[in-house]
Length: 52
Image 1 (tube, rainbow, N blue to C red):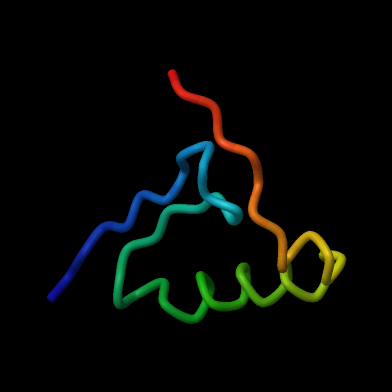
Image 2 (image 1 turned 30 degrees about the horizontal axis):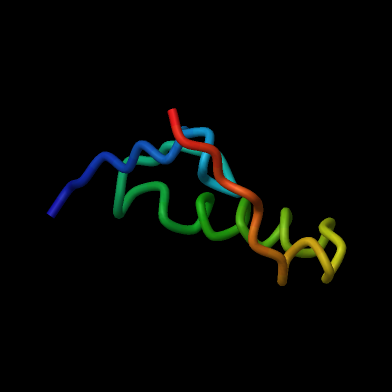
């Protein structure tokens, strides 16, 4: 089923949008790229959240 994923919110670690399944591999590549460029301490941390 075609689905439009809109993950461009500030709380998302990786901000992107994609038409699935068409853009599945591009979305995975984007996430993997960010993981490979990010310090492990940051990847394993939980950011402080503030209420609106």
